[in-house]
Length: 142
Image (tube, rainbow, N blue to C red):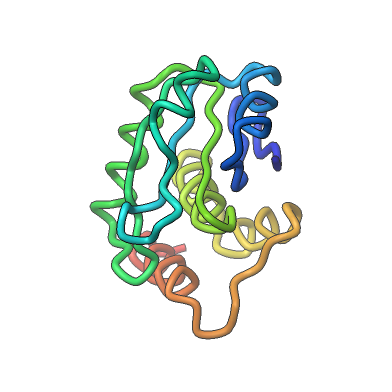
């Protein structure tokens, strides 16, 4: 689990013990970014049995769009925090979380990339998530 802010953490928790730890650390909501087709989506009952609210916002890295980011932002605002955001590797969770913070706090793309690196994460070459990030900042004029 990587803590991004006081009320946001990201990771790839998927086992009962890991989810229990998420709840014990005070997180109230888990947003799962894995689509069913990927095979990594969590079972809602497993999550709720640990006392967490479960929300699925399926994000396919190859089809990421501004609409998907907007849905993510709305979901994040709608459910109780602190919030744990997860996907299979944690990278989608990091990208969407950091883009949300970048928009709220008017970060430049360099600031976004610095925050991503500070979490120990990076985009792989030819990564569709990286392309989306670049397009997002170009649209914002940052």
